[in-house]
Image (cartoon, rainbow, N blue to C red; front, top):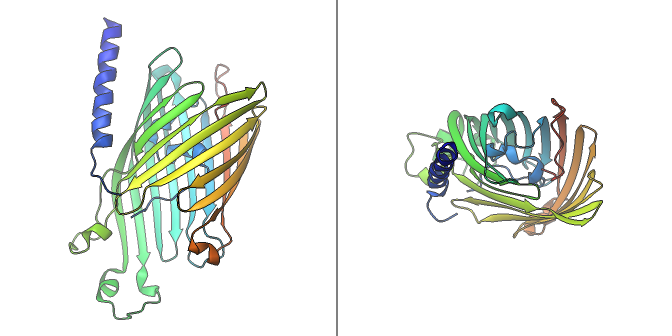
Length: 316
């Protein structure tokens, strides 16, 4: 009876999450920041990842995009994740500051996940995040072709507090993971009294699909191919193909390719409870003439709170 109830709850919950996640229009303005080392920053986009590693952890990522280009984006993010294994849940938060010249976004979201066993070796996690984005714009300071642009003069300088929430799924086992997430479901308007430019003045939903698989090559080396796809209305589909190698459960070396945008490489090392990573990618678009690339630094610290907890070697 208990097993039957568990299966029924699984079916109903999965169906509900799929309706929420897949109920969107076709057609794809990129607003959320893009990362090279997504595998160590999954919680920022997918709340279902919260606590699945079995250890509490805090991580930070700093990304400087299009280096030497004035006004180019820079992104700083911090996440904290804590598992409560006895209740099969995880909790935490993610903080983001994204600066793009005369436009910036500060975001703070609380994250929650609930995990269920789907087989002897796999688990499915359901995630929910809730918080806000705080936008600040000073577009009147920009050099403009039409200095008397009426829209910029009236609406270019503003600040907005935008509450939001998101959902996610994360299915994983010893050698793989697959996830689906919508970090922000509400399409908040930047200006409530503006309707003529509605499509260009609101938050757009971003749909993330990600996955990876571990292929053992020897007792001390594994190969991990991975994929992260981002879909958002008004922009082309973004897909990152990631290929990495892990040596002695400690050293990572990898390369990535982002469709119609950039190629890059990264390296990571685990030293005790600390993991450090560095990446560099270079755009192969015409923008490459004006920049010498993008770099990203990642730092994570794991809290081992129980003797029964282990550090998974999947690299996420």
